[in-house]
Length: 347
Image (tube, rainbow, N blue to C red; front, side):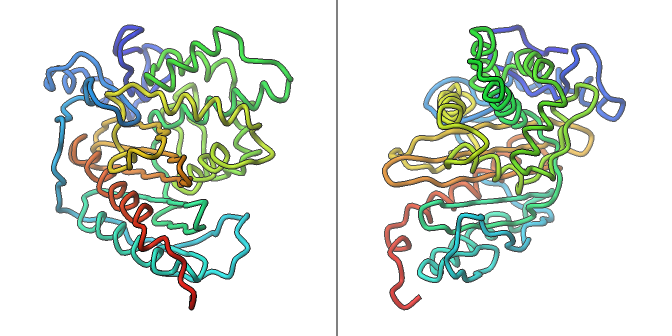
């Protein structure tokens, strides 16, 4: 089922098959049209920041942060990226080489402050590839992917073509562009079906994304993802590796940097104008509330840092977006604070 005509700004229908829904998503199937009409818009969008164009349904040009409710923000720091060999210290939910412990401590405090009291559940992973500071909160909790699974689908398509030694066809490029830059669901369904479950799983295995569970029976938007695995995906896109070639990485990141302006929200909030923003967002409502997810890579001018923020059970779309953007603003502020980026001599 496609909620909007081809060529419009994309939607976040959680299904791939057109015209059918899983039984436990019946409320979503019936309710999303009403949500869109009530918001007074004709399209819903997913993705990165720019200037003009429509925001997602019901999203004002600027939104103030909301508060209240309960949260699972605390979490604990875990796995350090494999490439890091420095002796590390742990500061709250973050770890870092000793010379960047002040940065880790500030990031930990600010991320947890942004999540404190937020309704629903959240998971956050952050990795600055320059300072090697990493932060993890709720990273193993599973969330419905909504449209962030489209980044996995494109990764699997590129990996398959690497294996066969063939370039993407013009049709595949066209569908990939629609899928990532406009979050077009028909394009996502077409590429999901073309790649197929076996090749999708092969890509996940190669990427060591063992916590990700592909949506069954074509329901790609119900893929179960974790912030841990989304960080592994972002690392594959942002750093040299044996899974995706440099050209594949550049292709996917290039599309993620061209997302339409109405979809440039979420993890890009607060990003300085000096970095290039690469983002994929996803959202869907169901009977438990709103699921709002955002993954982003921020590169250039000596910067290369990655962020995944996943949420569910938010009372509204705006509330979930505000939760994500509260975390994002703290991360961008701290990772671009010159005073925090000076290594401590004493450690």
